Image (cartoon, rainbow over all chains, first blue to last red; front, side, top):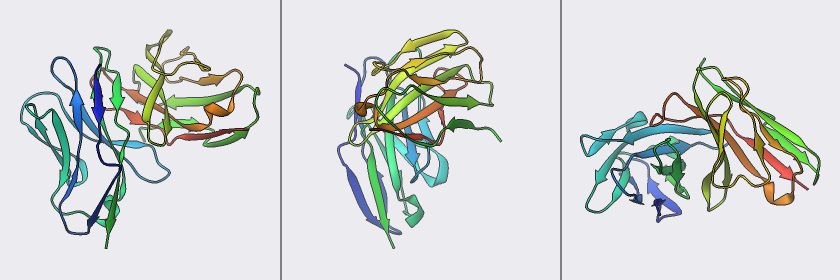
Length: 113
Length: 112
């Protein structure tokens, strides 16, 4: 079965420190991977995606993600976290040819001043 | 402004009282879908539509109906709501299969 997992329910980081949100996946074939962010009382917003090409993908708001095929991971990273990065982050993988996405359970990021 | 609009944003209803959550997008997207978000479960797809008059079940379609009579609109219908349908609902659209999803602001539904 194709799936995606976010092993951490919550990540706490101090402002200015590096932020990493973990995601692992299990798919047959080449993975299409996505990261979305949800701010309080808002819908999800697209951050970045990996389809093919460079393993390091750059996205919105200074975020990037590293695709690692051997570890089946797609971790989201930001070199220097801001308090405004506090939000719920979702990893997702495309699971069929019609573009259906399977979402992870989400990781709450808390950035403290 | 490009957007996906859902209504109502908040609704409290009682078991068995039919309700409709509307969704409209102004981006001429062909693909639209409905998700429900529950704590610890992430987002689960309810129904999706590849184009006008083309809809199909997602992972959790029981108790829901949809229709796609126009490209811009994709309403979610709960014919006889039950308490286990209390959830946060999101409508999303996309211009293509592997494109990013554009989400509405969400509709928080409580069924008593």
